[in-house]
Image (cartoon, rainbow, N blue to C red; front, top):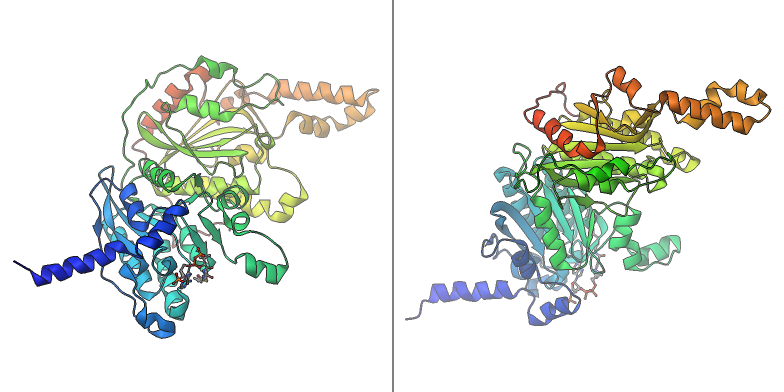
Amino acid sequence: MSNAPLDEMKRRQAEVEAMGGKNRIERQHQLGKLSARERIETLLDPETFEEIGAHVRHRGTLFGMDQALAPADGVVTGYGRIDDRLVYVFAQDFTVLGGSLGEMHAAKIQRVQDLALKAGAPIIGLNDSGGARIQEGVDALNGYGEIFKRNTWASGVIPQITVIMGPSAGGAVYSPALTDLIIMVKHTGQMFITGPQVIKTVTGETVTAEELGGAVAQIRRSGVAHLAAENDSEALAWVRKFLAYVPNNNMEDPPVGEIQDPLDRVELSLRHLVPQDPNKPYDVKIAIEAMLDTGSFFELQKGFADNLVIGLGRLGGRSVGVVANQPRVLAGTIDINASTKLARFVRFCDAFNIAVITLVDTPGYLPGTAQEFGGIIRHGAKVLYAYAEATVPKVTIILRKAYGGAYLAMCSRSLGADLTMAWPTAEIAVMGPDGAANIIFKDQIAHSPDPDAARRKKSLEYRERFANPYIAAQHGYIDAVIDPAETRAHLARALMSLFNKKEDRPRKRHGNIPL
Ligand code: HXC
């Protein structure tokens, strides 16, 4: 027996499921891209997707839009589950009007943004769009504005994740930029404010779209994005992985994983990680991996400001954020890019109840006119602000060099570290031995028959006297000097002791972080 209303519903459903049609989906596949629906299926737990607004259509009439069929108005929106946790999702579909964003397309995204915020659940945006739908003019622009506003309201309340899986041009880049994590797919994902043609016209520079806004550019050069994936599937797998470290919202704690390796695991190799020669580098990631639960370290922004390592990990199954100077790159100095990388990550951890572990080995700020003129004062201040503002548990371990302003900046006791430890190799002083000797023994060095030898001797004297953790420990700035091999156990106990920590700040509308 025929059922006309049901048949009509199914016909319409099939139309929406087909989106831009076979040929256009085929073109996506040829470019190595999945369709919007395939992406959502890959992202979510099987058969958990509930679509919202499948029948929404645009209301445009100009420039032939009255004839343009646009299933779902080019964006698939709804909710589903990842590791059985509720998430909201939108996926722009390039097969429908190039995934362009018009009034109703934007309204659908706003709707899931609103629902995600009300439900206290993460939201994931899968971007693949030609930007503002040109035929819809100011209505499209208004749509973006409404999305930016919601991104901002949701910031620090629910995790917001973006995957750039196609073009993202013009002001369209700013919704992603307001989110917590940007993953880009190599070769297909591109972000830029003005494209190659406009740049050619205005500045005369010749650059390809990939050079300008591909994953390499936006991760290594600009630091806009956090992770580069080989393809759509890898990018979506990373979204799932990232979510496993973060809570559903700012009122909850992150999910706790199983404790897979003993908390008191001893790592004898760490006793020899720091070379005896203070000028020799080593890889701080070896220390990070050894302290955390095996295989749990998930580095972010690799390739950008590699003089500082940031990432999420687990200790005893609990999520932690790790910040570490990397002596292998620029000797672990702090520069502008490292400062902004650090500050935003610490603020992210603080917003989402993730404890911060800081590993310190830095000779100081990177000197030079480029840094000074570039505003290292303004950007470096972000580091101080982020640490001092954060109320999550903060544990600092000084591995080797911690000099001057950089000692303070790297979550020192005075900036608000809850517990501070040091390896016996720690050197905590107002400045490095060479610089200090040059200043305090200036006359003796100058009047010596062999000034170079005198400088070396005085530098050594200063090192022996001050370049250790014990003066800071005597003065109470360091709580414990620990055997590097037992770092994991000490860290685990420290974090457990801080698990119920409560700390308040003065009430205010909001602070004024130097930007
Ligand atoms: C309407 C669009 C569109 C757009 C693409 N399409 N972008 N329709 N508005 N912004 C349509 C195309 O007309 C085409 O339709 C289909 O999508 C596929 O596009 P192609 O050009 O065939 O694809 P491709 O060769 O892969 O090129 C992709 C592209 C290019 C690089 C993204 O389409 C492009 O440059 N689009 C315009 C980008 C742009 O300038 N956007 C506005 C940015 S300004 P048919 O029917 O022919 O298949 C902006 C302001 C936001 O976004 C401000 C917020 C504050």
